[in-house]
Image (cartoon, rainbow over all chains, first blue to last red; front, side, top):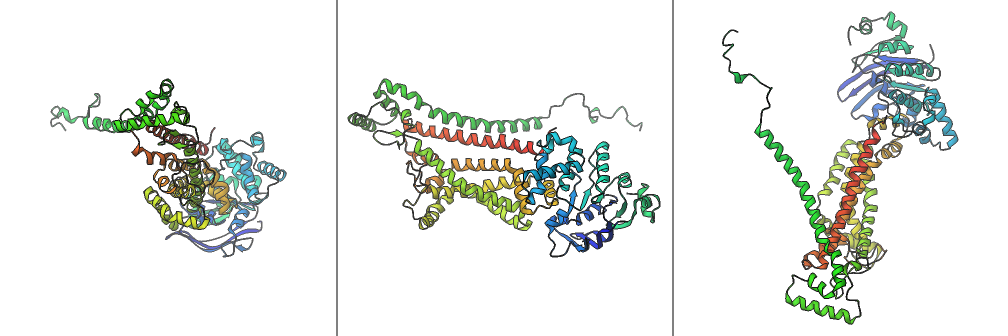
Amino acid sequence: MNEIKVKVKDLSLWYGTNHALKSISMDIPEKMVTAFIGPSGCGKSTFLRTLNRMNDLIDNVTIDGEVCIDNINIYDKDIDVVNLRKKVGMIFQKSNPFAKSVYDNIAFGPRINGISQKSILDEIVERSLKQAAIWDEVKDRLFNSALSLSGGQQQRICIARSLAVNPEIILMDEPASALDPISTAKIEELIHELKKEYTIIIVTHNMQQAARTSDLTALFYMGDLIEMNRTEVIFSNPAKKQTEDYISGRFG
Amino acid sequence: MARGTGKVAKSDIVTFNKKKFRFSDWFAEKVIKSVAFLSIAIVILIFVFVFREAFPIFRMDKKVAASSELMVQESYGGSDSGSTEKVADNQVGNSNKTQTPGDSPSSTLLSKTWMPVSDNPRYGMLPLFLGTLKVTLIALLFAAPLSILAAIYTSMFAKPRIREVIKPVIELLAGFPSVVIGFFALMVLASVFQNIFGYASRLNSFVGGIAMGLAAIPIIYTLTEDALTAVPKTFTEASLGLGASRRQTAFYVVLPAAVPGIFAAVVLGLGRIFGETMIALMATGNAAMISMNPFDSVRTLSATIGAEMAEVVFGDTHYNVLFLIGSLLFIFTFALNALAEFYFKNMVIRKYQSKK
């Protein structure tokens, strides 16, 4: 097991009075893929969004507990959320490239960090697109609108865009749920490649996807963390009956 | 079950093999349709009327060239004998001043003086155009940045509770009668600005422009706000997720995506300013002169109509010229609205849809 990157302690979250996350604690190792599974509304996406404080954007959210990334509690008063999000990137369920060219999409992150020299930007764009395994498909149309690409390509553009700001952790919220099997396979391959350098946390509805891509799997149900273990263990020999029922499709 | 199988009244069975005529549906549809077409027809008729009244101006020239006396007859045709005499006197006066009597109205349209009721009437619209342009420009420079920044604030920075207060309050300003804004400009703004800038004429294009800007702010603000909130939330999330600050997200992601909508907002605001009459009448000083100084009095196209239409002789050249101004205003605002409606709105739609 690699070193612990994210350490969550007794994290609770309320939307108004709705208790959405109930005292979650878990350790997420570095440079591995951790998958969150569970039925809709179980809190897995909410939990993912607490890891880079995207829930701050929603009104009426109360959060209690600690999330430590590299031993720093990101819910401390002094935390700079903007820089936190540079370190913890996020890929969304629905691919959301900006209505700009492919190049400008990737260069957006570096540019807001004050990089304006064209040669450096070119280099970052090329490297990020190569890392996201889409360079060959778009290298001839870098200056076309990113919205002209297919859904699967758009999602990889989004991944490349987040890679361009050099994150350490990448959160993926059902990154392949809107894609066809071929595009999904490409994203999964990509996840496999990326875990060599990045810590990846992925939320998925698709249990085969969790089984194929992840090293660790955590099952959420009704705001509780039911079980977390190595993926092989979860899928072959879970400790709890509830887990077994869920992965065999008896509920959820 | 067996009871009355054959006897169940045939009318109970719903048949659909024959179209049934439903009078109330038919009637409602026709009424709604005719009302819709009626409003279009009214607009078109106004259009036709305005142009028809403006048209004689160009026809008159030929007759003027033929006989100057005829022009007198034509243009003052409906007036009483007293004024005919006066006109005849004018004609003599003109000849004495060695002014060519056939100074046709349309040849003076592009001259630099607007003097429609002098002995030798001149209908130079240049000062009116310049005045309108000046006022519009000042109003736009004042209103557009203010309302766009306000819209950015309420749509992206303000807490929901603050937003719920600010938005309706600004929109309430749209319900202000322009005569009230004009009065405010006339009594308060003019004095305040005169104290600050110390210019000579109290009412001028600057005061008028600011007052008209006040009238345009709610329009530009509301439409800009709509354009900004129409930008998909996913853009904002993506940008923030990449570690952009709120300010960077607002100015580099949301604002560029909303540009076509904001253009439409500004253009519609421009249309409002352009046609605004009451404020222009009250706050701009109404002196038709050619000057680039923003602190000089001006007379706008719409204010000219507003001020002179009531006193003009029906069917007179002056009357026709006013209608010509009216049709020009009509064309300009129509063009601006069409531009906003068809061009910019399509741009917004195209922007968010992926084209395969």
